[in-house]
Image 1 (cartoon, rainbow over the protein chains, first blue to last red):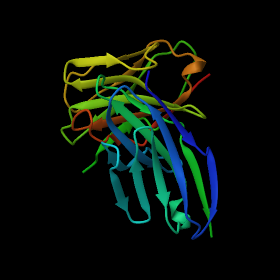
Image 2: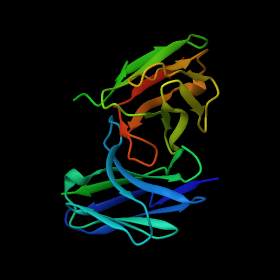
Image 3: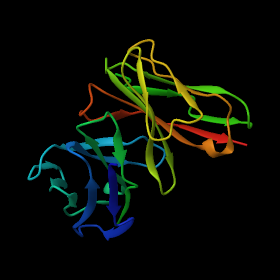
Image 4: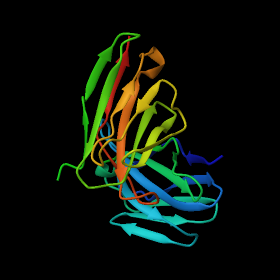
Length: 110
Length: 112
């Protein structure tokens, strides 16, 4: 059974204080790992897809990396507008399901 | 370009009532899905569809029914609402499996 865990559950940073969010997964053949951002009262917004170990993607202050067991979302010099819940999801090669982690709630204080 | 549109945005039901949550997408996506989101549990897949006329169950299908008669629409039916179905429901779509999903803004459903 595919499983996804995320840590920490919540993270408070000062503006400019870089950090990383972790997504650990167990899947029988990875088709893709997805990162999403969710603002309160809104649906998740797509950030990145990673398909194979060693792959990296960047967008503004965010960088996602992937190994065979986990993915990291690195946030460099965050701003208050980066405050949101960050969700990780995986899809395996055998099914059509997406399995989501519980998310990390990020707060960036000015 | 509207993307994924969900209606209604809010709904309150009494136990035993039935209702349909609507989802429509205008991106010609083949894959559509329904999730529920509960505090501390993340998004859980209810049902999904890989194309018109094809649906399948996800992780938590009991108490819900779906059909897919067109590429654009994927309604979710609650047959007999129960308080345990109080949740936020999200519809999503993607070009195909393995591609990132686009989400609607959700329907907030309370069952009294």
